[in-house]
Each structure stands twice: as C-alpha cells, then as structure tokens.
Image 1 (spheres, rainbow over the protein chains, first blue to last red):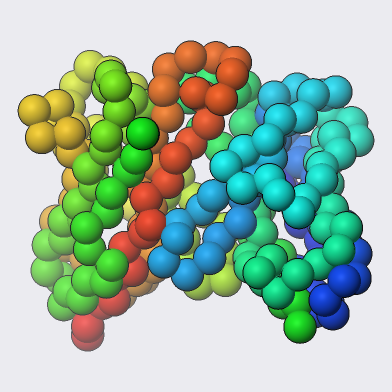
Image 2 (cartoon, rainbow over the protein chains, first blue to last red):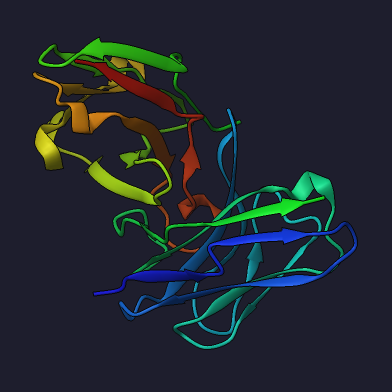
Length: 114
Length: 117
C-alpha cells in the first residue's frame, strides 16, 4: 500500500542546474499538490492540480513549473535552481479538492542547492 | 487575510502528562479544520478533522480537539503523552468551497513536541 511516492528522497544541486521532482499516487485521487517546507514556516503551497489536465499556482510558485502527466503523476520542475529553493518538498493527493477530502502526503524530497 | 496561528513553537512535556497544543484561525467564516502530525524524516499524517457538528472531535492515536467558535480556536489535546508522540504538529484550515483556491489548505507554522522520560 504505497500511497504517495516521491523520488528522489535526497538531492544536492548546484546553482543554475535543473531538476524534476517526481510524485506518483496509487489511490486514484483526482487532486495533487506540491508544497515546500522551511524551518519555522510550516508548509506553503507551490502548485496544485485539481484534476488531470489542470494546474494552478499556489502561494509560492515563482521559480517552479509543474506537469500533471496523468491521473497518477504530478511532477515539479526547477529550471534554474537557486539557493533560496533549498527546502523539503512534499507532494500530496486527495480524492477531491473539497476540504472534506483530507490530503495524503509523501515522505518528502530533501533538496539542497549550493 | 486568512491565516492559521500556532502560538507555541516548541513544547516539552513529561511522559504521562497531559498535552494541549494551541491553534487559532482567522477566516471570514468558520473554516474546515485539521491537525496533522509529522514524525522526523516523514511526511504529514492526518490526526483529525472538524467540519461541523460536535465541537469535540476524536482522532487517531488517542488525540482529540475542541473547536471553539467564540475563540476562533481548535486546540489539540491528549490526556497522557507517550514518548512516541514526540513530533511536529501542524494545524491547517480550508474554506468549504469546491473548486477555486479556497479549498486549499493553509497551514500553521507548527509546534514541535518533545517528551521527557
């Protein structure tokens, strides 16, 4: 019972490099989300996808792009990594975007940018 | 602006003691409310949620939370803390509408719980 799977778990990049974080869920959920978590900041929404084929910006979208590849997969891309993007990134999914459907989280990707 | 506030950054309690973690929200109307727990190196796990009805809600792992409209609060409680409860706890809120951005969660900044033996 995998739930939400994120790859990789850890990554170190140099400033200016690009990278794609992968996320897949096996719960047949419609909605998927990308968050970043920084010390003392809680979780902040980067992008979300209410359903396959749609994506929308969240609170902190600058410097990121996303792709909802299919119902299962939602990727996050850093085109030109910056040290300010050092963070822990979480992917989540829910059955529907409504608040009655709690979000299920992956274990995170710890990203360091030098 | 909508916001969720957790006033305590770090709390230490003794094993077996009771626990209360505070959460206050600021919304135009009563939002939907959640508590999540994050163990070190892990993702977030839902403890409990409040939508309407009874103001005292029960969750997993022996946790409960009480919604108080007059105080705009949704505090998390546990009668007797176990060492395995050491983790970071996040309160979150969302509006009730499907579609649009109002269904998204807004998180508090978290409260780290340490448990003394």
